[in-house]
Length: 545
Image (cartoon, rainbow, N blue to C red; front, side):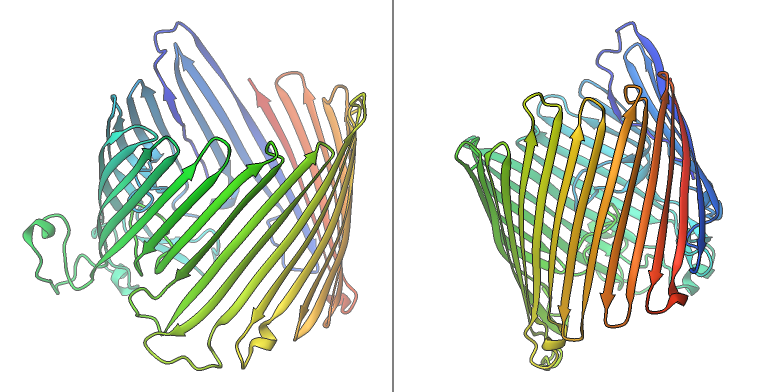
């Protein structure tokens, strides 16, 4: 696997007479051995990586790459190279790029192609053309090389954005058309229920600021998605639409909208009302995934007091699905949360978090039997006090934190709710001590977790000890940590011991080394045949220039 990419760079100072080259290259070898379980890694693997920054009279070009032997069996290797140079209000995109016009139209998807963005004054323009997906024909899946396959058409797209405004106040109109190349795969594609699709999406993205502290955000999109562009079952549609995208019996239209009205001043006082609605099945080829069939309305507030020593934030909202009554049942949720943080003095602070989620399922297309109806409340409480002490000479630092959390799921289903309800209590205390002049630090923690269910209880008790020390003005460092956890339930008792050792060294300005080794020893006291042991280590070297 290799990766090569670059971020946008400002070429405004191109006329400056300066040139330089700097970067780093590195190599890591990973060793693995196990007994008692099926190996989760290969005995040896390696990773090569590096980055290079070339500065030619102010033109800054950064590159980086990564190569690993782990993905040799994948027939479509991950090779990426891209560059986005910028000069004043002109930005070019070349190669593999991530361009965000709108989260519902084009956002977060990797594109191989070319694009341009222009922002002279208040004018906003963007255009991009390229490939969203490369065709893969029965390529081995790297996550499951023995049993799974990946088959995909080559997919190309073009998108335009035009708008007016600046970063705080703007209005953009976005259009995107993407389509699979039906000739990029053989006839076997249809035999595997893989059909070439086409997508046309229009949308807006906007933000308006009023009276300095009030702003309104509006974003929406309408997506026409044809799942099989080769289908012969044509649907009567205006010519202006069919010239852009083929419409047939597999075509669907989806709507997505989002709005936010917020007041926020410099003192931290905030009120916000947010609304979101995504049609069932909404999708755009310009995004990887969008949670759909959801509608929610949320109110948020927050403030600071006592010279920001006290802060509060909270929200409450409602959510539902089954927007087009296609499901057998509709699920409604009441969501609320609150957080209070109080730091009265430098040595002490405490925070409280509380959240509550209520789910109530109602009949949709059919009546719901009481035995399967979903009606639950889920409440979580977390309390986190902490203490920090530094001596007068600032040579010794101590930090103590305590965490207590409780989560309770109350299933109100009359038939099976008792078996599904449970409570979880977790307590943890952490202590760290640092001797600053000699670069010596130690830490210790203790954790207790208990889960109570009608079907059985489980308890986890564990602790961690760690120490690290720097030598020769931190050119050398050595660290060791060990964790022991005992897990007890009605079926078994398990003790897991995980020691780890880390060594780092720097030689001059250019060379650095790291050695890391750890063991995962799982001792099953109930059935020794289920015990296992794993040893993992890696050695790495980096040369900087």
